[in-house]
Length: 214
Length: 236
Image 1 (cartoon, rainbow over the protein chains, first blue to last red):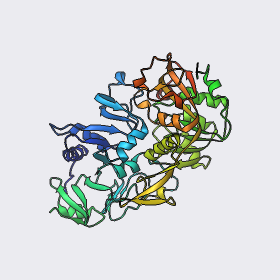
Image 2 (tube, helix red, strand yellow):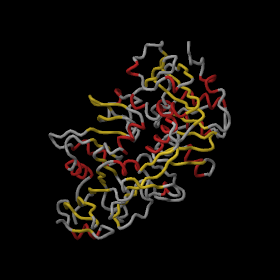
Image 3 (cartoon, each protein chain N blue to C red):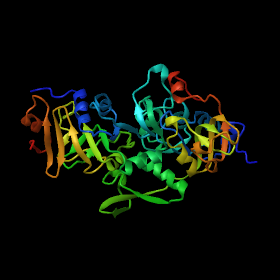
């Protein structure tokens, strides 16, 4: 069996599906890598929930501004043409359908597009939702980048989320290390297999029926 | 002549009573009004309900206020982060209450209070545990959940530049929730890095109009939460 796509290749593959001129919000983790793989000739404008459009890459340590952070509380820069705004405007952009694409990581995705990426529901866990529930309801296209299975080999693409959901029926496309998968009215459907990966392998590692490309 | 300036952070927070609801500006470290928070620790008001996106970091600022036992309840969207230790410990021990609110709903609940809108419908959280037992309504074929305004007795805010009328500008992403909280609190207390004369802020550049601000204290060279944490400082 092959190893499929790397984290970088998953991010690069997702970037290919983002149209030129899109306003994009990126989640923490692998989604952040998308900025490195913008296809030539395209421009994406990055939104961060804490109040900026036109977010740029991290600064050099000696050039950082302690008041210029992203939603993951990492230091970032502002590109020429950037804009700052308060939280109600920022979430109006999200909830009002003005952001084109959001790329999120996840713990689970269900075959009907439900996503669970905010809480395991464990009794001793401190629940923390941040902007995830606003993003999945408000952004026009919800993309997910995730390993196809957990570290223990359990499927993350499943029939029904066992963790508390972040949103219901909101995901449109999933980029895993093994395949690109769409949420369709008939459930998961493979759009593209990673090089060397077979349909049978993907089906075996998916916790729901998955339809072949076509 | 209207002049909302106060001589010290101690005097600006001196009338915050036990049991007050206090909004605290900032998103993580950026925009956190550290000097006002430390003045509130010195002042000692207890049984506070605090509204902030997070729960503070390290053992300074908001985390120190919580660690000092002055907060009975936090209303926030993201109570844990890599540097957040004080709140998670108290929460697991059952010594502090938590109301978890999605970040955009938190912002809009605060804005609504400032705008005189008692409740609004939002798609955020529909179908999740956070919408359980809340009023739902369908608009144009889609479900929405009713969320109430969120008011406060006081707001503690950090800004970059203020004039004596309370017109404010902020620095970059340190703005975040602060303009909304200024609107939503009965008494808004602002620490400003620079106090300028009336007329020195271009009216086109005012972010928070002075009508939303009650008290202004100049705190030049304010400390930044990240700087204190990097130095492993704690307060008091």
